[in-house]
Image 1: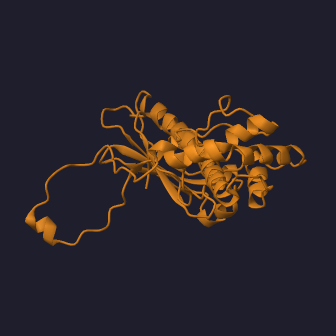
Image 2: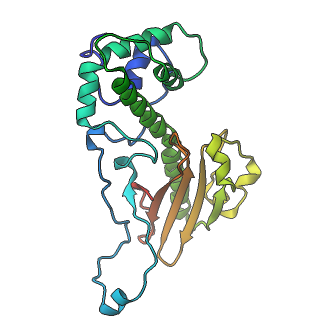
Image 3: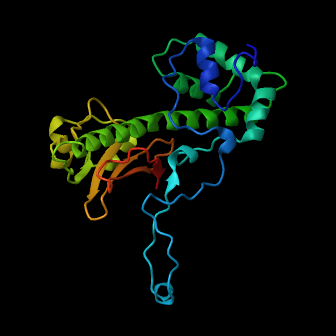
Length: 272
């Protein structure tokens, strides 16, 4: 299939799904272009100060402060997006392997996702002449793992925004209200390391979740927490999960200031 029709954009799954009709699901939200992959940019949270430390401050021991980075500009832990050079190599030198993988996938009758089927084939790929099989297979596997991790994170990104809308609606009432904190739910983060888990309505019975009008429906892959700071006039919504292939946890943070009396939902989501 012509590379001009399906230009390579660091998304092998898109190409393959179009080729053999597999159900790839929606593309990841807020996913950066692979050309932007690289050292993470440190970005201060909305309420970060810029005061110069005094000599006394410099002499005193300080607790470690987690670095906040824009989630859309940093990959989930455990994956390595293709850089510009690697993308170009795949487009130029690996297309025969992509064609062979697509043909192999067509012959399979599987209920697995397009990603899982493709990764299985790439683990023992069909031999293709004039292709560096080891290099191409490794690059395609990396790209698919990145795509899958980003796709899994879509749940957290959308859920954090959804909860934020609920918090904003409570502030907009007359009289306005501020929701209290809600504990990490589900309680056991490690249970998510093996995949999605079901929660019950009782799991979302805490005052904070009820105030925000939130209760997850169906299986979820992330643990959610609400931290309300009345003094600083901000909410901190947190999603924790294991989107990558090697069970490394990530923490996504949505900081919502409401000092103006309204929830500022225009804030980005950070990775911590």
